[in-house]
Image (cartoon, rainbow, N blue to C red; front, side, top):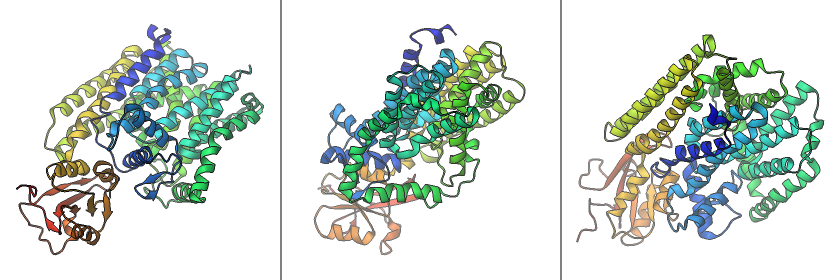
Amino acid sequence: MTLLQTRFAPLCVLFLALLSFSVGLAQLPVQDRDEARFAQASRQMAQTGDFIDIRLQEAPRHNKPVLIYWAQTAAIYVTGARGETQIWVHRLPSYLAGALSTLALIWAGTPIVGRRAAVVAGIICATIFMFHAEARTAKTDAALVLFVVLAMGALSRAWLNPARSWSTPLIFWTALAAGVLLKGPVVALPIIGAIVWIGVQFRTVSWLTRLRPILGLLLFAALVAPWFIAITIATDGAFWGASLGGDLTNKITARGEHAGSPPGLYLLTMWLTFFPWSMLIPLGLTFAWRTRKDTKTALLLGWLIPGWIVFELVPVKLVHYTFPLFPALMLFTGAALISMQDGQMRFARWTGGIGAAGWLLGLAFFAGIAVSAPIYYGAGPDALSIAGAAIFTIAGLTGLFWMWRNAVAKAIAALAFCGVTMGWTLTAASLPAARDLQIADHLVRAMEQHDCLSGPVAIAGYAEPSAVFRLGTDTILGDADNALAYLAAGENRAAWIDPALMPSAAMGLTGVTLVEGISTGNFRPMALRLYVSPGVPAKDNPCAS
């Protein structure tokens, strides 16, 4: 694997990531609910020029700090986008953060596991399912991983290298500040975990002085304080009640969405989230156990284990919550593969058997999603989806074969190709072909056929943020009575109303504009009928002369 040792290896990994995450960036429709909320709030920030207060339509959006909104607003300005921006513009910060995370991981991992293993970890980062999902999603998680990796890379240098330099604390405190501005205190969880783990195992914390904590805290405060002070003044302190007293507290106390998930969920779903490299999880953990007394391994164990336990114990669970901990597992996996290459480990016995069994279930899941999504939620079998599923299945099985044969370089190439083609298939073919899941897009296409209708569109019975993003900031969300009142107050107005909310309107009406689909917010069937002023069902072409 001489390529892993060349000076150009990091640039090759960066190019792989840029290519891997690019296809599907524009094809994947806007996703409910978080992505649509982040994108719409960023669009409004660009439109209003208010870079302090965050709004979703007229409502405050104070559950997260501001950095991702600034990044998406910058993407709008840089691309020259105006008005109703396309979703790919809002995804650019996540896309770039995902690609740069591969470089950051190589930089962070080199002093811990060596250059070859760090480059392999970068390849894993560029082709893993979770990054395929997050690098194409206009929200915080891809950028959070980038800042966590940078902070942990600086922390590892402070721990392993007694020489004092200014670059290490500068990177550490800047990355920590960026993470706090992005997603609050979550960025500190792996950092605290590593410090505590090292402190318990080696009985020392004096090495933290290499981070120049006094000057570092001053830099941290200078970076984060201005916006936090400004938002406190602008909202009279309401931001803190919504973000800490609402969003964060709900996750801890199980009062939020997705509450009540049992411990162990993340361990179970790791076969999917770490795919196609999940077959190597047992091997990577075996490497970690064998080297557990090493000072380098201690930092990775502290990065991975304490935070994982916290996330498993918190009752509110979403599969991306553990994502900032994945780079540690990527480095363990990369180190295990290099140990295999050097003849020190083998993919066999229980590590190979458990890894292969869990991985095959993951492969079957993703291949099934790729093929079935267009069938169950679209117009029928999709040729591109079927071809893509066949290609990444064959590539993955080839990687498994070469892994059993201990042909590490060939296995890495096959698994990387499997990961790239799987990401492309799902995001550029299968999910776009699942048209029943794209209700907001159907509403937009229907409105384009009715150019005589003017003004904002009212919606009753469907309040997903994707509808606001696609139909415009001034979209009116409410109940059927409000929608009908809006129609009665003017001419040539339009409202989409769930027929179930209109008991006087017969469900069997024909010759009217009707949109049907599946709401991705709750996966329930939805039907919305177009009504026009003064409140009557619209014909298929109400604008015909």
